[in-house]
Image 1 (cartoon, rainbow, N blue to C red):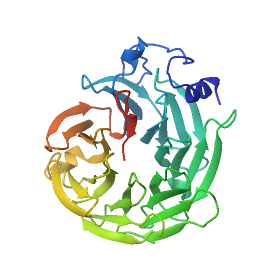
Image 2 (cartoon, helix red, strand yellow; image 1 turned 180 degrees about the vertical axis):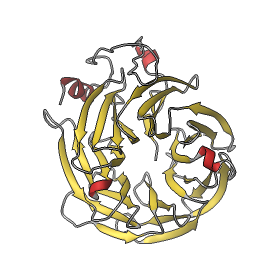
Image 3 (cartoon, rainbow, N blue to C red; image 1 turned 45 degrees about the vertical axis):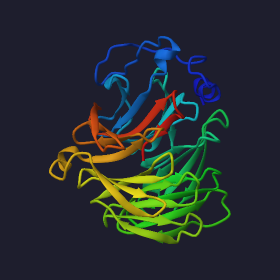
Length: 358
């Protein structure tokens, strides 16, 4: 591991041991570094978006609503995750085999972690407690844990799911368990991260993709895009407790930080279905665009603000992120991204420091 990476993982501030930037021209296709300025400027609320067609990362200032920077990444970057102290950003390189780690201070790529042949990393979580990265390797039917601060080189552990198309994942707060949605196998798989038990898989709808664990760990929620359904599962036994009809093609599901509701991203409707988690019922729908606009918008990833007042919806065909007021359902503005904006994360020093899209 580079000394820059080790230092940034340990320190809660961003300036103490950061590498020096190498340029400042905001030109698409070039690596761009903003002037570092003072810490107040460096820690403005920021939205990071991976652009899967543009092979790039956009940095959007949430105060101005403008894209302030764009840098090249790897081929076909999809999901991303922020380190617990906000100093680093990990990008899952779906078009290749690596997880690439960047400094959020100057966007320098610090290390590229290779997961091996055919990995196709996609879903990714940077665990708040341990600082370990968990990522699906869809092409290997597995997930990896990456201990980036364990030694001079990151320590990798691979866990087989035994299923095809392991795409998205959730991880328990105690890091004893992970769950994956397995698109091709039509299953959800429970993985024992202690290595004591074999994976346990259950069939859940058609093409399960979205997944989110309730904040209290008492329920696992999954959306199945091929059958227009959401499911509540018992995280321990994997028994399906409730099945709900959602909008069309619900390829993502995200639980509000307050733990009261979840929303599904219904691509074919251009909208969101809101699920009351106590009653396990759909209580309302939110129009982000419309069924007529759905193809030209092509909404995918969804992300809650830490206070639960805003929902950010990535629209990968129109290269925008819709900012939605949860209470009113109004689209407040559309933020610009690069070509094919998809994965999202917010770095906000005024809240719980960061949130990552699902």
